[in-house]
Length: 405
Image (cartoon, rainbow, N blue to C red; front, side):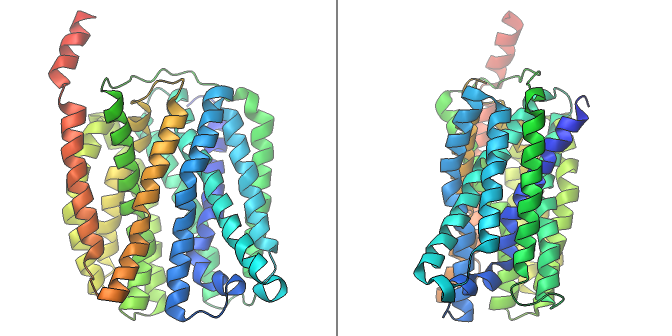
């Protein structure tokens, strides 16, 4: 591909931003007591899940702010600004004093910094996808899959550091060093992006799908919900379910997370490349139906403490999520593309990412263990129906219009 250096820089920024963001996902239940003490073990886990979901609620705000900046001032301005705020939030978490030194002020700042991380990520990920789709005409599905996988690479690095801490290779408040590393690398990436920002110019015209504006809105919103549901179930909830509900060894929970991360990195470019052969809308529509049996089988195996369940849950996430950037960017005009995609996709992920916290609460309170499967299956079926009617209903009409042109 042309401009390989710029491509690497965009993907690298996404890796770093996700490292900063997801380090908390793996260490949340360890970090939280430093800033919000006097909680039981279950309360700490539930609160860490809620704090993990909080940035997803904030992300739509950041998505719109940075999306509007992207449409009005250029993709490079928004991509650079998102990393700047990400570095501030990460350094803030690294140097925030514990509760005993600052009391309630520390707890408030802790929540605020998590929200700031969500705000910055709301501008990073979708705009990176929009820029890459606009920049490269060929292999867009593969590029989308690589971008999706890049966030998981950041999570894998964060997971590796968390593993060192959980297994007592590092102790005490040494977890702060992981955030310091993230802050330094994020700031360095911000500086490089700022230096090269003048080269970030779009060149490829995206072929748009002709459907009503309201249907474009609904489609992207459903994509966000599906991604939030399918990704965070194997990446976050499985670990919690295995260790806290089934009482499995902590190492089993960590292994479940590791399997998910490695498979997600491998499968996304694979399914992305398939979408180049059969179109993103076709693959995602079929995948929305396939997600149902894969999720049911995966969760059933997880209940048996069989880690093969993670394979099926991760396949469900990747087969739907790999080509999302291709389809989303085909639905909107370039002049308002970023603000629409950012706001709608992030709103969808905010809804979908609440599923792990909701599932954890219902299982703990009412012992409804099949809640995750019920939620995923219902939303997936609705998505399949709407995609089928929305993206393919006017197929013959589009062919006729194309011939007339």
